[in-house]
Length: 135
Image (cartoon, rainbow, N blue to C red):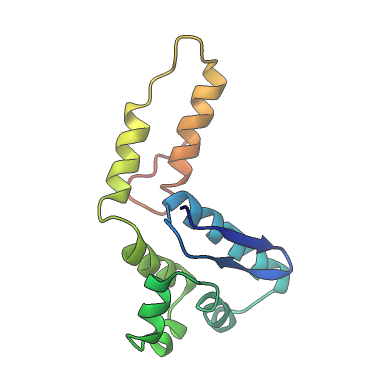
């Protein structure tokens, strides 16, 4: 079962337990950035709120069992999300997405606009990585 995301502009997003993909993490990050913007939160407030947004055991175990909450509170949201990715995604997630994007072919009856949208959508999941292709 895929992980679910609860989001609202007025409340912090919540990432629930389940199979977490880069697409779900990207949606979560966008929802969190929207919340931060809406609330005009400073960096310290962002970290404090971000660590409370996760309900997946792999992330909560890192924060609570490994006693990393204090260290996480000193991180930027970008650093926290990098750690989250290392906990929940396969080691080859970036390479795998890049391969999917590079091997994508336009179907015989598929309009070019749909093909281009699909490639851009996959590329957007690679933002802030070495594999992201600039338009």
